[in-house]
Length: 210
Image (cartoon, rainbow, N blue to C red; front, side, top):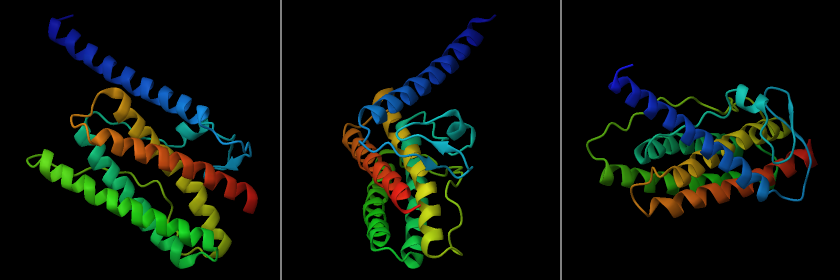
């Protein structure tokens, strides 16, 4: 095998190893910070996932698909990810009957809109000559025709896995060494910690209401 081929192969294996390390770090992080509630919840494909766990069914369903290879990659993917969450939360707010869900939708819209604006500033400042287009695969189902309990349940089921994806991307950036600017580390930590806590809250609501 030529030396160039060995270098390419080594780089590919190294990238795969970094992703696996980040995924394991996320799982350990989530489990170590798990809430006391041990209720099960149902994923969108119909299986039951234990509290604080990610099983093969989650991964196989395509709901967990985040892989990043650079700081720029993190920013463009997280912007698209946040934009989907804001859009879904806007539909939720208009169709839910629960004050808890209206307030949660408001929190997502306010927090993630501000984070989108910050990430766009960083993209324009740090990577003015790079293409910011991203091939984002939606994770949330269409909620526009759902009302009341139906929209609440669908939103919670989908947003749990949507949040897990954001937590995984953030943890991957933090542990992979991809961050080129120091200020993005606490930013990613905030996304990770906030959305991890919201996962616990959404899981509890699913167990309580459905």
